[in-house]
Image (tube, rainbow, N blue to C red):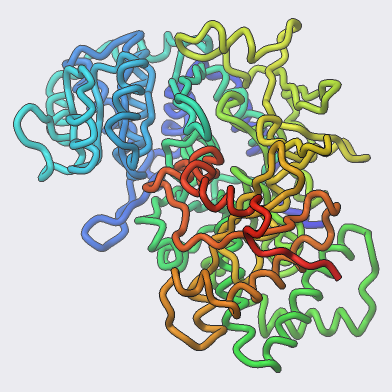
Length: 612
């Protein structure tokens, strides 16, 4: 296993700094006092990377806080931020908290109806938006807000304040007692109100205190080998608690440098420019990187055989290091050969100096984790929820076990209910949902454990394994239960399948809605046909059928789809089928394709998967 060296004394100092802080702004202030002019954040400005030192970010936080105070923001206020990742997001976030107010993140792609609910329910009277799109969503929502602050100065207009104008106002009206008031905040004070992205139902506001987040940071620093020399690239949205805790705040209290990716489309380019040493990502990034490598490596039959052997050898390297099998001299020599031919290119594609990655937000296929480990990029899969600040458990780099999400964090307790539901208790757990007393009563057991809604089990080493969401479990009319996510993940990793969702609750068998990877199919067939034509093309359907059989071969018979239907359009956030954190909105997908689902269960509907 990987032995990532750490200066234990420096780690202990950071942990003590976090442990001794009563609020997130205070922990950041202590880092500023130590790091001063060291770069804290970076972003592209005018096509060039610009860095902001710890001292400069802190000055901007103070200026923006003073500007917000002039708008009436104070203890107990709620201020919303609706923007893509940028330095201004972090400045606003820390400034809001420093005033004793709570930050309310809103995903920048949400529409007016969702924005209206979040602003109304949280009672936010000030909202910070990125640009014209977000400004329009706020205006069209009809929500009653007193002030709108826009980061993009050109997108303002009447009644809208520019972000830099608020900073300038604040610089002229600094409260000499601002720091003293900030240092009087307590761990029990509310730091943020996060509305869950919602795979079903109306979004709920999760209350997180300074103590919740600080306790989680303390435990993460203890087990994840991050150092103040590390460089990160912020890819996931700061509107999501995973990026906010494990990238933004982990950096601000840990002393590293964090750059902001320009967009999802430019992540690959930004990786090569920033050359991060540590990455926080969702499994989809690894899937995309592997798909690119696979496409390049299978251009002809000879290269395809070499690539397949390289994948097997990388996985064998993991199993050797894990003590599961022995690599003989011949395979070790082959590994060194593939390191020069294949694995080096994988590392270069991520910038060339990544020491480790942490994966969360969805299930990472074990074989994919094994491949990247063998390619020299160890990946630790973790697990958590918005309600738990978010991390509950994470794999340790000196004992990685793919297929698990590792042991619980040192200050987090986990137990399983009789039905296998994961229950959590610890200082990171939310005190409850905003304005939802009935939800709060249902969310906790009588003795105070939080119900995650996830089903899991522990392996022999005390590592947690997630089997599925309790509410996503399908029950066939035979009485058998089906956990859809593992099967869906296996299908989506097939070369010609982009997305998949199982259906079958209350039915006799499981079926699947499948979105093909149309570009891959076009390359395979050598024809540039429209998506609708490919969905009915016999060759394309046979290709999908064959891959589905292979992908699900290791699953129990009752979990393997008996029929499938091809969908001609990708499921997207804009289309309402996935959440901003890339989770399927199962009810929305099922409703949109209700006719296909009914056809699958009609006597002649769908395509039957044969079994050999």
